[in-house]
Length: 423
Image (cartoon, rainbow, N blue to C red):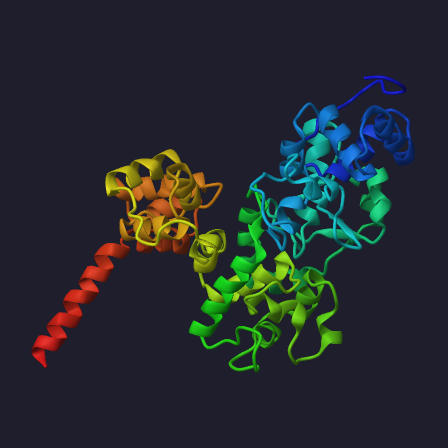
């Protein structure tokens, strides 16, 4: 590495790009401005300053730009949906330059840290670093330690380490955080967010909005752009979710917007090219589905359900069930990956797999849950299998229920037939 750089550390797991840039600068005795100037000198071409800095940081960390953007920025979340015509490129690729340009943004006025993570990092690695998870919208507690995060209002705080900033950090109110943990909508939001941040490409906004519009109408919520009929998504959220948390994940304060139609939220179900954020789409999904995995699968399948944009023949058959089962194993239970590997519509594949009793496991399957399911299948009781593998009993029970869906439907059919005959 040329110039004033003596040490270039590797980018640590889940380390945010801005925090990594600050760490590289500190180690080499430079300011962030000097680091940025070095990036501009090192990268040729007419790209923007942000793109050049992101490319330089990715190269310095020893990984490709796409992997860097995917694993060390908030781009996979904020660019989960796009109003532009999709080119099919993953986040951070040459085919998706807008995501590379946004890679150093954090999208909020404050940053957060977990004090226990700071102590653990220093004990295990000798340094502390800024974690991407703690910067995501809606995060009030650490998923590892389940303790309240502490916040700092200065977004330039990345120039110092979390250990140095720890003393001035203001912890979230613990009683408030405990109340948030008991709100199902918030827990579903965070679960979907975990899947979104691992997704490698953007979805077409219009397709997602049309899918949510149809779901909203089927559940009695308002959908579309015509006269406001049915329940408003925003009204439901205001009645069922902590307002302080809700205002924290939206661009403007919910309290300032009032209780009527809130475009920043309700436009998620308009079914057209309204400007709408990823947050609003996820909030709609967590209201319209009670299971976070089903909600995420619906979002990921939206483009394949969008008939006006579908190019394949509507009567194109799926592959046979043997191939579906084999592909399910190869894809480790990720429904949309099964569809992509087979070159088939995601919605049709997801429906067929569910019919076969093969539930969606998400982009990062929970190994403990898988082990518990295996143990249950080998004869252990539901409670024993769950507690042995440190899994909540209700989680294992839900997975079992989804896995026997086809048999349950048959039993329901037999019951209805018997009732009809008896009548």
